[in-house]
Amino acid sequence: MDALTIAMPKGRIFEEAYELLVKAGYDLPKELDDSRKLIVEAPNENIRFILSKPMDVPAYVEHGVADIGIAGKDVMLEHDRDVYELLDLGISRCYIATAGMPDTQMNKVSPRVATKYPKVASQYYRGKGEQVEIIELNGSIELAPMIGLADRIVDIVSTGKTLKENGLVEYEKIVDITSRLIANPVSYRLKQKRITDLVERLRKQAVL
Amino acid sequence: MTIQMFEKPLGMRDDFPFIAKKKAELRTSGTNIIQQAGYDLLQTPTLEYYETIGKISAIADNALFKLLDSQGETLVLRPDMTSPIARVAASKLLKEKMPVRLGYYSNVFRAQKREGGRPAEFEQMGVELIGDDSLYADAEVIILAGTILKNLNIESSRFVIGHTQLLQLILEDFGLSQEQIEQVRSAFVSKNSVGFETLAKQLPIEESRMESFIGLISTTTVEEWKQWVNPHNSKQSSLFEEMKKLKKILDRSGLSEAVTYDLSFNSHMTYYTGVVFEVYAAGSGFPLGNGGRYDGLMKQFGLEVGATGFGLRVDRLLEIMSAVSEQQDHTLILFDEQNEDHAFDEAQKLRENGTRVTLQFGPAVKATDEFSKHFSKVLRLEGAN
Image 1 (cartoon, rainbow over the protein chains, first blue to last red):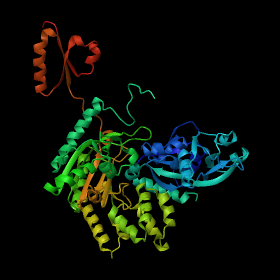
Image 2: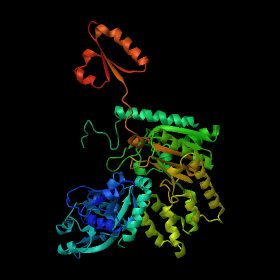
Image 3: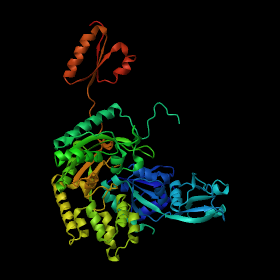
Image 4: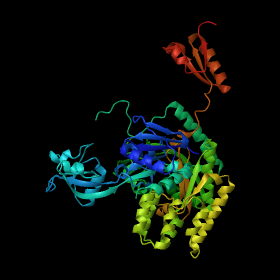
């Protein structure tokens, strides 16, 4: 059996994905006691998990240090990486949307958009035929319209709670997001049997 | 931005001696095999016109290094070898000999826009077989690529083979427009199963054929392809027969275990018109090389001839080649003025016997012990003895 290295995003997605693998019949360690570990071994299945920031999963997979990975579609849209997208796992469902202060218009002269997803945001506004100035932020994007840094934000919305608590409203939905199973093209070819088997087993468990 | 002394432009790398040495070995071994297979080596210029090679190469515009010549014409650092060789063949060589077999080992340039990890200048080694549209030509180049890899002791290599024309005809049979076919092909290039399945639902495909259509993305053998080949379409049937023949030839050449036949496999390079392939091996996360039939490219040079070839990425071959070959004997001779003649004679004698010798004037070396550590043997010819 080929050894398989799987890049997983830390946190909630990891737990959901891990559960999915267990349901798909993979014999994985029950307790993951030390949550600060970056590498987790599952010797019974000859699988090694590497835990990374969600944004970084496609990078590990593209360079082939991980054979497969679980990545949000948002990350894949933002970072154009050469990886194969094999399966929609249906977990971590959310969407990317524009939001801002209620009843406001975009500034006519220099409309500004703050976001963690500059590429997605820029493509969206270009598609609408609007030229906007993108300001890239790394977190707490909601701050930007509240203190007048930007007219709109482009960000992930899952429940809408954060927006509401900060007095923001959602304007347009851009795209639905779920987690995807991705593969390195070379690993996919060299370990095709094992990876296809994994895809088929997960397909039955995917939350669609 | 102030550029520091040690910095290089993004994606440019130094070849330190141990890499340069490995590269030289690789080059010798590879080009020998290429020449033995009847190919003539060829070198083309580093600079080409943007109007011709730049556009024809099918490398993304923003990956081209561009500059202006004194007449104001835009030039590019050659981004690939196939198009320059097609240029030479179309304008000259084919008139003298056809089919013509050409091989190369050259560096090509592709600008990197993102982070590191990918070189902007790298060497490629490969062949082009121009003026032969038979499947024997396709088989020949695939086998040759396999031979080169085998000679470099790369055991685990795997080829994936597709056929762009057969795929095109099969997709047409599903009643898709050219635009829809392009969408499907682009999902296939990135093996985007999720995108492909979503796309399939929006395409005008009969309910009864949907399962069959989705299945296109997951074939691994030529036999499996058969279910999509329309027996009433003579072109499809004959291409399929050719694929079976190709498989037979490759099997006979000992590649049977090393090939996956994936009907959905094709390339973002649109000039491919027939058999296309890519080759991988454990140890590199990126393909080692690729190739295929590019009659479409020859057409852009005004010629209706068949052409096929492949290119291997030297940087990726180096990455996976087994550890550096045995440390060679390297003798150091330290001499002083008194022993000058003797030292020169000794060095020549040793070199003639095949030993690698560094001849060094002793007093010029400040830290003799440190320096001597780099050699397997030290010979001191100093003072009166």
